[in-house]
Length: 356
Image (cartoon, rainbow, N blue to C red):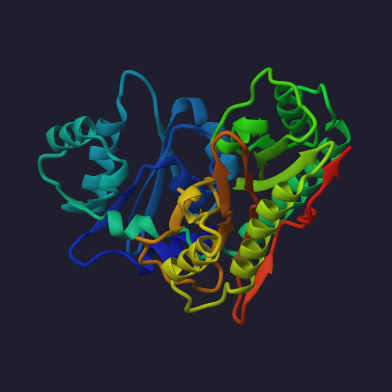
């Protein structure tokens, strides 16, 4: 975690004495703390972690790269931080405006009259995009568990099984293997598979259904995000044409990942492939997003994105076509940008599977 603190200090905005890190994801990234209440005040030379008395012992165990302090009721966090800021001589404090409510900002203004609050959202937006080696190790394990969950649930897929059954089995498998679910799985079939973010229902699988499953595992603080689409019972020529179109575009996008590529260009390439068949109108979401300590992390592979790919970034590549009244196909892998190309982190089969 000292590497994270070093990176934060390198990016400290000019004109501030310190930054306040309050977003729990960024706090965990900086310190290793897994509790729900904690903040960091970091200057160019000092840093302190502050939590409340519920987490005094936990903070002492988990936070090893800076001193830890705690307070107890009736003292409030803002009052305690006023003392810390005065002790550190902070008069200009950077904060993440994108994750701070107006009410919270007003409270800080009232409690810290000698401190000028300086929005520093640009510091936090891309802070975690380049992953450290231990983060990549956690991602590989989270992706391996998602692959194993797909292999496991394939045995359940047959006519008469409900979307709920598959949803619960995915969640159970991930939790039984010691991880958390990264998000509520998306399990949709038949015409319902045309809903990119549909929720599992009591609908039972029927012959000729597309079945799309989007799920992930959270392991050591890192998340995987995997989508696979299969056909139940029998695949028609229309099923195969739609699936093959998405698959070929997805493979091309994955193989095009390398340093220096613009995110918007990757997105555009997939839309061009879909437009060749007139199906681009059925692809309404972006090609992918950043992935890491949160599922939808910083960065987007989208037509409006200004992101440029760099080594160490982790992205999802997830094109999809969704035709109302028929169904949809989405295929998603997690990838890391390397110095000379791409490493694919998810390895579940992508060829069209007709199950059982």
